[in-house]
Length: 182
Image 1 (spheres, rainbow, N blue to C red):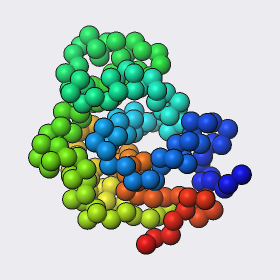
Image 2 (cartoon, rainbow, N blue to C red):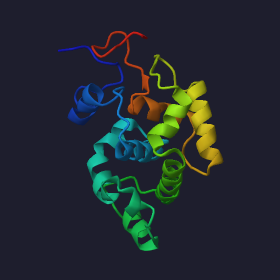
Image 3 (spheres, rainbow, N blue to C red):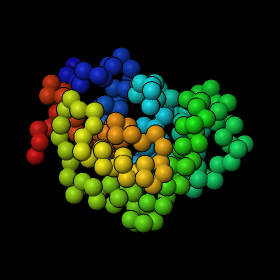
Image 4 (cartoon, rainbow, N blue to C red):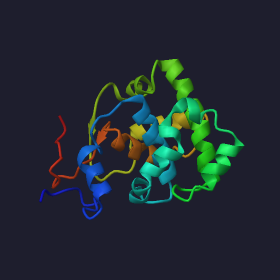
């Protein structure tokens, strides 16, 4: 059995697959960028494993992360989500998802894509670092997103987001997916 990052619960198939096939691997697909931003915002105060275990239910509940549907959610849909026992039922986070999706869409219009927005901060570079929970990059993106009105996008959440989408690769040295800075 290959060595993995110490945080990866190898007894949880979903967590194992996430670690091996997603985390730290660059994926700048617009829908994926929105999905991970939504999931990371729900993770605030909870474990990532909890969110991953509910990921399929989140996909169903949030219309497969279709931004055009999410930005049009009304009070009935918000109440449906709050009553959905299969996801995290937090009114503030649910409302933040709708708000953040609208801002995400505005950023797409301004930059041509959310990917282009992120790459403005990164200069098209991947960061390789471990044992961090925030850095200057996550500080700057978090600050800009908050100025634009996004919620649940503090620097630690954005750092986790950047790891999730592969802009930051933080696989530990003992992990079979570790890549030394290039």
